[in-house]
Length: 108
Image 1 (cartoon, one colour):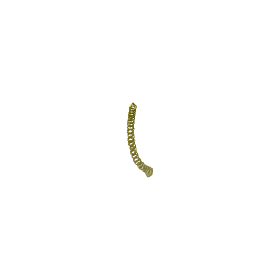
Image 2: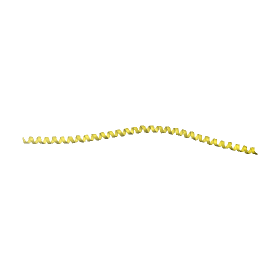
Image 3: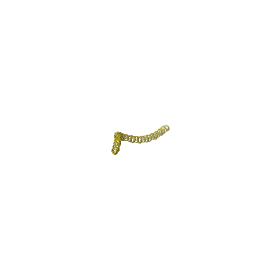
Image 4: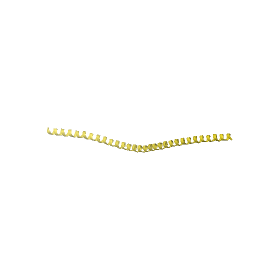
């Protein structure tokens, strides 16, 4: 009778070990699956970071070009205004000279 108890205990331990082995295999399979997913995501993250780095560099170049262009445009506007004022002043001076010349001519 004692042998039956020992055999039953031994069979119970073998059954528990088999169940535990199945759980271990299942978790190892899940671990391997997750490891592959991590590798895929890591690869995607690296590609995304590379893409972002390039796009940020291009955006920064756009910002620099836009700033330079706006600065040049303002300078052109200022120069145009100065030129326009000079032309108006010279036109007024020439008109006054012409009027004075006509008056001098009429007095003669």
